[in-house]
Length: 190
Image: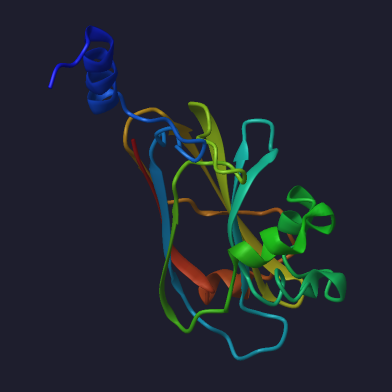
């Protein structure tokens, strides 16, 4: 059997060329892990949290997790103190139900909670290198809430942050003595 040079070229190209598919994803610029110890409360209007990433201008890049009551079940519509910063920042009333459902999770029992972000936006695209803000908001009881903030450079060196609560919402001093979230650690790995 005799092959012409054009046929050989086609065979070689097909053997060594990597096919391109529309679903191929660009490599992620890293991975971020949020972990903390969660202490479940038995009191009413408690146990709600949301974790999200915003860019340097505070525009939400992606919600990583939100408790089911506030997220999927839309508790924010009838309990205005349920994660109000996340509700406002994420512009939840404009989001498709499916996108909120995708990040909603049942309120966990007491113990360790771990959430991983692949450094992609809500459309699955890798975020550009730069500074990002990681927010963790907790509705502890009634209108008492705590907000944690850490800044991470995506595309930079490995980093680990242990943020303390910032005071952006009403809370009583007792909330800090019996925290719903403790040992919050945010790690970035390029």
